[in-house]
Length: 404
Image 1 (cartoon, rainbow, N blue to C red):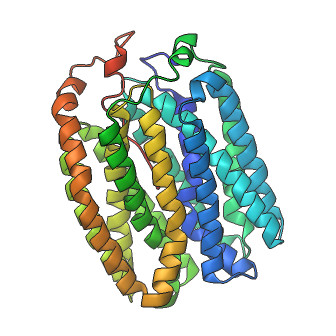
Image 2 (tube, rainbow, N blue to C red; image 1 turned 90 degrees about the horizontal axis):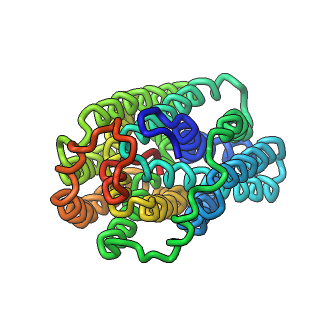
């Protein structure tokens, strides 16, 4: 798809555009609740619908990107994102906002599928994905710092996503219209490693649900339980995403040196503690500590998880399917967080989510150990300047990304 020795900036840009909506979920849901006649639960439900639409696009397109053509699908996804989010930003009609969220979410999922498929087919997927994480984290941090100063209303975060989609459009000219015909002819090739892939998909769905149940209500925790202002909460999120950038850089530098099991298993356990701490916050220090530590570790662990998914299939199908399963969990996150917090309170919600993460850490680590024994040593042997890397070794060190 791209020269193997150069950075595929179109894929990095698509990755950033596709993942921006989940990264902006707290401010999007919070603004929907404050700017429209919606309860917190109803606003969370709209966020869930948006992400569910994104997941549906991933499942639908997982094995069709090569056949339809990356350029065509990327342009379709960017158009849907621009029209959907842009329309939702400009209207105050709740049904129209919901419709825009559905259309925009499907666009985000389409863009993400193109990016994930392209990244999984490269010899250096971890590096490319961490660049995408850097891009989306930096952009989201900028939005969090800017939005509170743009006045009230629900449209600002949605408009930011729409404008990002439009800005990425020109880079699609560097994408191929269609891949070589051979992948299309092998469209029905069975998925390799079905057991490991299925376990990873199911556990990542639960992993993402837990993460985003808190992420979807983090703004409310800061505003109502820790008694902070919107400007302060936005600043905490921006700092947290900034430290997440440092985490991504560290993960990129480490690469496969720590293997897969340690970052995934131990990282998930520490994240569980961060979630419990953040959910119980009653002051700025506790809230900031929990959010910053959590957001620093989140992209590191997620990059290794998506990298593990990519290593299971060089054609990128598991990467897309596991990413879509993650989006399903993400989609259920805002509504789950709203319901749990309404029924049990924020601290109890955090304790339940943390316990769930500790339970699923075991099967995720088991898959990583199984895959790592046969794949991690080979990552180091791949010279990045090799013109053609055998298909079975292309995607052994992919990393994934962002908030969902």
